[in-house]
Image (tube, rainbow, N blue to C red):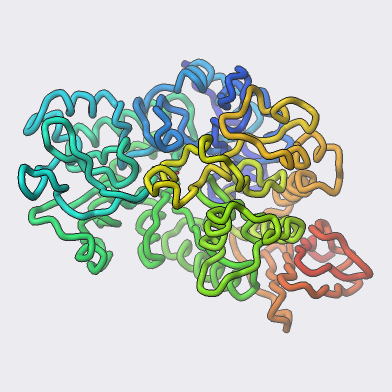
Length: 559
Ligand code: NOJ
């Protein structure tokens, strides 16, 4: 095992703040990033071989979605061994080599921890099945007797996140709880062995030099399953105020306080970011320095490309971050949602958020006539460069730097998302944002490696990284330029709105005078002579002394 010391990240050079507070973190979905072994599944060696891409992009950190041994019932979020690498993805030695190589480039490494549930193939669950009812092995999971004659009905009518009952019956007649897929039994977080084992896992990866952790469904671990259990309707009617039986319970922070002590025992302290879908008023609990330290803010995933929506979300989340003592996070895409270039290229429908609109479009088979690809990309460039100017950290999702759209036309037989299977095909799920990346326009599988485990559409070639690297006007060139400039311009975490007198334009200034202006509508925004001199980045160029509609500019500090 190698333990590498991270060189200071780009903006740490210029400031004394902890690296994560204003980092650009690039999410790698390992199975779809780069396949060095040619089996059609991305791997750690692939990450190593594409390290120049990450370096040239200028990210401060990478976050790897799960790469652990898994039957892939939920894209790797069904973990069979928390302290190993899936043989299809690599080995622990390769992991160490990858971490060392990333650290050498000044890129930190964040790994995904999935504590709410294990895989049903995890040795603990296998032992629980074998040991039978009432056994200590079953106590690490949530087993209950059924209801109705012979206990043939589930203990409650609870519905799993991916559809269908949240309970599954095992051979001897007992039922176990799975909040997600059947293959993801929920762990019992009141069990000391569960708590101790996760501490060991966090120590294992921290000792290997990992810099931080992304905590999957951080708000669901602890549960109050005192009988009688409530019905689904009763659950839905209960306030989520810290005492809800299943969600966002106050006692989950007892777990994170232990984790925090472990993180802080390292130098530098390990970081964590919570994936917690909780009411905004409760986010600060996860983001607090005594808990995980930072929490995702997913509001922009739901928001239309509109000035008022962006302004409200930014103001709210900066206030929430301030309340917790953390920094805010900004996210436009990840492995769970329709890519933002596509969301922004679809006309709005009444009553649906842009996220729901994207899902509905996929369900319809992704009709080309409804998607304005160029507009989506234009808006995505403007939105990304806008959020990269904000105080806090930005999470980018692999492929967005290539301007990738959602791959909506995956045939049923190639689909992998449990949502698709649990809904009987009614929901198509998240495979369309997980299609392997196009690296080379003219290579087989667009340079990904072997025959991709999810099929790449023909138009993926138009987004290939090699072609974009050679084109100064490409989205990849824009991301590289933006990240390099951001590192140079980065200011303390303040923001001041500059009123523009227009409701389709947002403008803000950072404490060092760096300004960001975004035109959300179609109309151009004229810039004054002094402003034109200060333009250092323009997602739509400057036309006749004005920034075009649906574009963002960065203005360097005056003087
Ligand atoms: C959230 C992850 O982002 C998602 O991909 C996964 O399906 C669920 N948690 C369950 O682990």
